[in-house]
Amino acid sequence: MKISLSTIGKFHTFDLARELYARGALASIFSGYPRFKLKNEALPDALIKSFPWVQTPYMAFPFRQHLSRSVMREWENFSATTFGDYVARNLPECDLYVGLSGSALPAGKKAHQRGARFICDRGSSHIRAQDELLREEHALWNIPFDGIDSRTIAREESEYEEADCITVPSTFVYTTFVEQGVAASKIRLLPYGVNLSRFQPVDKPDSQRFDMLFVGGMSLRKGVQYLVQAYQKIKHSSKSLTFVGSPSASLIEALTSRGLWPEDAIVLGHLPQTELKQIMSRSHVLVLPSIEDGFGMVMAQAMACGCPVVASNHTGAEDLMTNCLEGFIVPVRDVSALTDKLQQLADEPQLRSVMGEKALQKVQSLGGWGDYGDHAMKIYKEITK
Image (cartoon, rainbow, N blue to C red; front, top):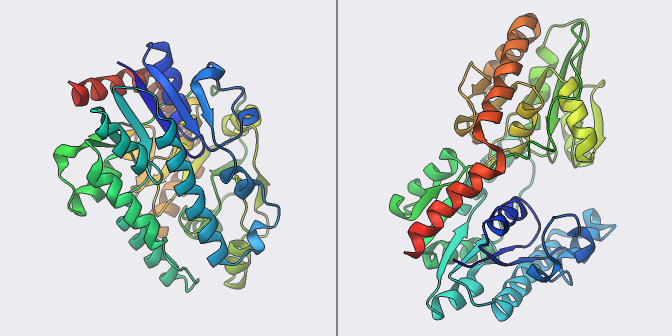
């Protein structure tokens, strides 16, 4: 079997590509990233097809945050459509095309014209469910939000319709598709893996402190607004809250104006994975209270470093861990439940230690990306037979 992949960025698709290549099944992988950003992906250059001409300038534009939303929408739409057309024009002969949603429709149609199969790989909730959740959240906080571009919604729903199968990373995402009317028989659950060679315990938390960690883009979508409220309520003589990932000056300003932003919050921005595993190993808990998150891979990364997790039920946590065993799963938007679980970890060092050990054991038992590759191939063989 020969399989072609596409992703406008990198995401988990390159992890999948490595697994397919190891099994002799990779025909090609298309990306909107430039080649120099893909040189360490451990794949032959001949199999990587780069179309960086629109997406890369968009990502690298130094004053992007100052562009109007209408300009941003046009750029994003142009990037998705031109990348999708490039993949379709250059799609090699293959038995199966797996495209990350948002730019996969043209190549999906090309695959069908040739008699091949098309799988739409969706990393987040159904596009309409995602739009509804984000609209609700911005309305709750009275922060302007134009909604997801209607062209993006139309393009995604056309992909769902055209695809022979839709792979999703979590039960949460699966449920949103069924609730939006997609037949359950068309959806396959395929949770992501974790690179156990890159993430492992390299340090230990300070037993006299309680250090909380958030990893991800700082946004309402990721639930930062609930995390800071919970943090303010935690009682501990030496507590801290550290943010790793894209910072948001506008969100910090909005939360500060409401008296919610902690003055002692530590904002580090992006960190390389070598530094990320160090801070995960030193932290007492990773907190991911997302409003909408297909599968927070940072949870598995933290667990691989021996760090327990407290996450909302909209993160894929239920597919990764057992509530109250390797960490806690709390209802979305529930500051009280989030505070209670964090306070329990702050008060019970032994519980933190046990949960950290169980978290590490659980992730190691899942087999990393290798098991993900096996599961993916099982689905692909079923769809192409």
